[in-house]
Length: 176
Image (cartoon, rainbow, N blue to C red; front, side, top):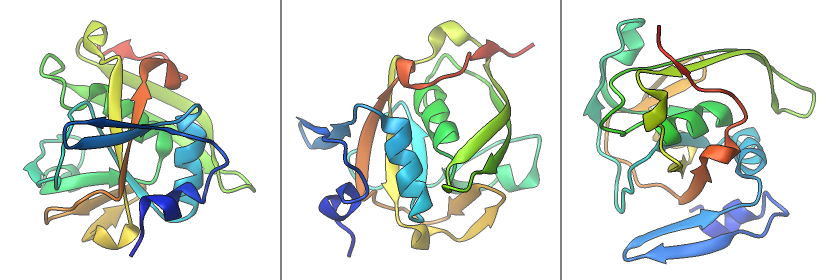
């Protein structure tokens, strides 16, 4: 079984471990690089602004753009940038809509190279200053489409890291 120490073997960064009641998370100097390393090792990510202490529970999603986005599930990604974006915008009550579009390719080092990006929410002022990325083994999924995966059952993260607005390198626009 994977442990936090196994996951930390994939980085030279020294994180700060933070315990807030039963909620334990880590802060990394360069979270995007750490998450990229994990994705290259086959881990999947889920971002939200909410602190979830136990298992993540499937929720009904409503994505008019695609059928895959309309399931009762936990949505995971293999794209670190998407995970950070959803960590800052997902679960924020004042954000009614969220859109992202990315054209990317995997470089020779396995990391994503972003060619075109678009990130937008209904109210950019409400984007959270901090959020959390939950890390999972890739064996928790029931289905996938492109870089998006779902679990239809509750799943417990192996590790949680905190990300901040400054960790997201792109502008988050207002949905027109």
